[in-house]
Length: 116
Image (tube, rainbow, N blue to C red; front, side, top):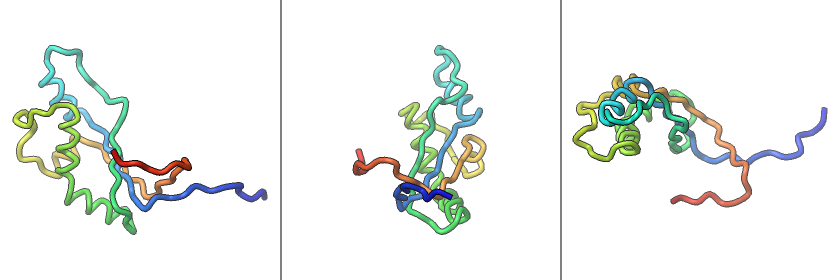
């Protein structure tokens, strides 16, 4: 067996991929009534969080911090907070978004990571 010629550096973060679902698009289309309906997003937001030991710990983090993600997802599309859903709950968040947890983040580039 040939040795692997190289490896990629891992980053000390976990990632949460957030994909809007139908209720999110229903809300969005109700706001933008005069525009063509939006049914799916071609790109999704990825949130990096501190590295944790298990997916259960990551899911617990999401349960405690879901509203920050919820707010950011709404703000990306519509900044007028008065039209955002009130009384946001984790159940509502789960109905509006699919969440994928990634525990291994690999850096394929040699350049430094820059925060903007």
